[in-house]
Image (cartoon, rainbow, N blue to C red; front, side, top):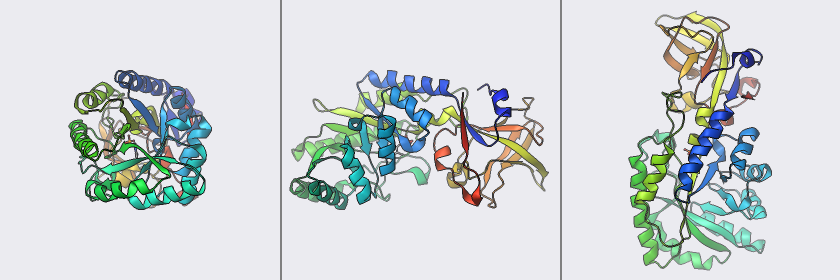
Length: 380
Ligand SMILES: *Cc1c(COP(=O)(O)O)cnc(C)c1O
């Protein structure tokens, strides 16, 4: 991207810079491709809950996928239609369940029988019937970082198929629940799209099971997880939505009148954001040079948390990148490192550095550790 140096130089660093044009183009591409098959796409708020960004996503007509009571509240405050709001999560508290019941949301995506029992009790106490979907653990490997793999039996998420006979026997007794569908979410930053074909095949098998049990499911929610290209943010700025949705169209066997839902987070917002930071000091180490910048793991924790890769560039000096730097933050932890041996041109104090593809799971995961100021956002 062409960084607007005039704006950057007049803004105190560090800050997130959001490219709203790219955001619009990304959302439009997703809408065009999903509309081909009449699919419903919910935006997973947890990727980025910035008001400006939420407003744009809402105006485009996306639904919302929430993982906390406050996200449900936020989605509805921003103006998402409660009928398009799904609420997932393994540990919904009573207060959060009440919030979702207040708004009569589209669906509780339920992850265990104990949770179903509690939602039923609370709904009964309020004289309501809650629409629920069963989040099923399909035991499909997302082939992504183990911290963001969620669809294996060893993960804490979802209901296992071997528990389903007992659950379906109990369900008719939970009279304040209305089963509307099944839900899956197998992981995040999935770049091997054959994984989604595998998911479809598994969903088809699971559908056969429910048909045999004479359980009707109106909604099939296949979750999110479509990855982005962290290596090539400029040449590959928009994920391949065409291929992604076509896989589901080609491989998912639907029953009459079934609706398909997606919950996309990262791929809708990641490339639109860059963390802009300034070089404070260049320090020559024994084996390497350190570029010490004024952003740290407090502003962007992904590299420290998942060893994630982000493309890093010096945007003040665009000459040939013929030196190597470890780009590190000021926090007292060795994991506070954005990239090792990053190729940059000769870099000096005062240079601006962009850490790319940080629009998802960046600002939302920022903290005030070390009593640092909360990171700001700028929109272009
Ligand atoms: C995080 C999450 C998503 C979104 O995942 P992305 O990888 O950002 O697309 C969707 N559904 C659920 C239930 C989630 O927890």
